[in-house]
Image (cartoon, rainbow, N blue to C red; front, side):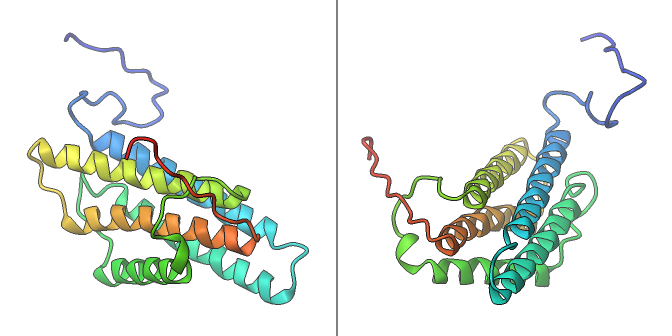
Amino acid sequence: MGNIYRSPYEAYPFLADGIEDLRCDFELMTDELSSLTGLLAAKIRLGKEGKDAAAGKEADELAEELVWIDELIYHANPTLRTFCSIRPEEIQRLEERTRALMEQAAGDVHRFVLPCGCETAALAHVLRVKGKELVRLLYRHIHQGHETPKELVDFANLLSGYFFGLALKLNRAEKVGERDFVSRNY
């Protein structure tokens, strides 16, 4: 392919990278994931109005946890071009939070549920899928023969699990029951 036009208004310097180079795709995906995580934190903060003090405090703590995860996602963003700056203790903390959310959901995690419910749970389900897309892209990058930090793969997988557990928690908090999904194919 010949020279391609490069706009002087280019929004990001790597947008014209070759199609086989997945690094920019990874960066765009983490940017989207981070933006949606920020949106979820904002919706949780907004949703605390009209609730009792304990529920309001829990919403603030959850929103702050989401801001922490938001930061981690942005730290992951340049990893494929540079190095993985997410620390082992941060991955461990995310793993602990994910496990705690799954334990709280006890009866809901061993079956398929529709990705629906209250607005914040539905958004958490979108984030869950975005986490899986990130994992898939990382595996494509690995299949191309690129070294990829194992911690990054773990982190992306944990994000998906965290947001699934969070979706279940948010539905419970709003007293919205999970809707079972029984596949016609399996």
